[in-house]
Image (cartoon, rainbow, N blue to C red):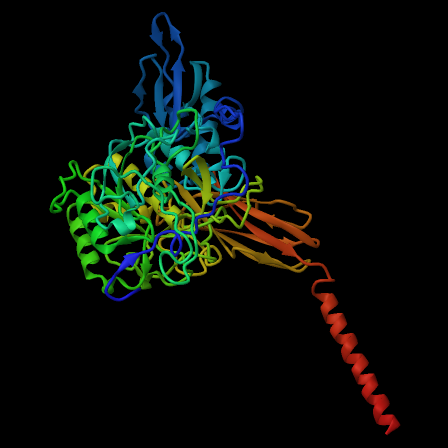
Length: 609
């Protein structure tokens, strides 16, 4: 940082913002914004098995001469059903397994006992019918925005169709929580209010341009009520000797799009994390960045605190997103720490990007400040993007930031985060893209619990995060991967990768958690993608008091495959490699041959001597 003038650089020194080559995503010539056929299939096609309430049986008794027959008490006792039953409007009775007996069973065993009771009861002469207490539901909610299919970062977490290992479980969350009028302030480059996916959106509320220095503002004036982004392009050397040229980033619009400034489920463009959020643009970054003075005032103003000469922000934002920063510790700008402290004391959660220097986030501002939620970036695989993401003990959580250098889902597009820019949509990557995922989910938390404090919001985000292994996070990346669906059960596999010789076995351990709570007495199924390469046994196991279930993986023949553990509709895979003799044994044979050759040559030299 330069002495005497502390300013934060966005884009060039902060976000890795990469536009795709060719046309902007979602803007093919002559294309109409139609519903993605894949979304239609997810919603209206396919068959899902009926689920039911474990332990409950609905029984309809036969009626003779106007009197309902009784189910024999001894039969209920033999099935371990409690004699007390609750009646339905249709005259059925709902029996439940005895609570003391049910407490001794695993989830799988409860389901099996329920189905067995149904079979026995419906065979009784006094019973008209018996059935489980089924659960009906619509398919997991997916928006009809045609580019949603490219937003892997929102998908259900896991392997298989419609999922991604780096997804944050939004579809199941949207079933019951699409957000509410929670205001999120985006302290950034401003916004493009006339973007096709934003114009007329009820999610965009009045913001403010906090830029007081016309050198940076690029709009010809100082502070005003218009946070429209005029662009931040610079020529080579304009921001300082040796600085490269840079095109307009439209960074604030991309960030706001992820949070949900657009009209999600409007049949056009992309989706946002939060369908009903109120996004407020607070402009502080322009050409060459922005000043700490303006940023500190923006933090306070967004939180509803007074700023001289500026109308109060009423109602205040409950969440602030700052996808900005610079190299230097928070101690170098105590005024920024004070502004953050004031905002948090006023009840506003402050979410910040960890930084894109593949370095310890504690050395960056505001990522290293106290009382912020510092966010590192993950890729499609749910792994820390070690190529650029900062890390360390100051990071609270990991969230999708993308990696435009990869295409792990093999869809032909870069694995960046897709959101709005001028002229359409673009894939960007960076911790700048990770932070708004967290800000959007924080607003979902507040939609359910509006009185939650910043500390309580952080606690829920961390308690429900999907744990990461040392392979997924080789450097500290917080509590785990962001998870929007609170009841989600995560599976951690140890080891995360397996290498075996033929005939060799290794123990695979699956650890189940709901948030940070270890789950015991849960059934886990194990299977191999190719049993001819690597077999796995047993096929099912039950977790112990430490939340662990185990199976043995055996190398059968050379090749590559994966083993999968599944529980409660979620899964996790570990790659398995069984090398051929040519991989390991051939190396030994070659080494022995070379040793033998040199030994014979040495003997010949000695004999000639």
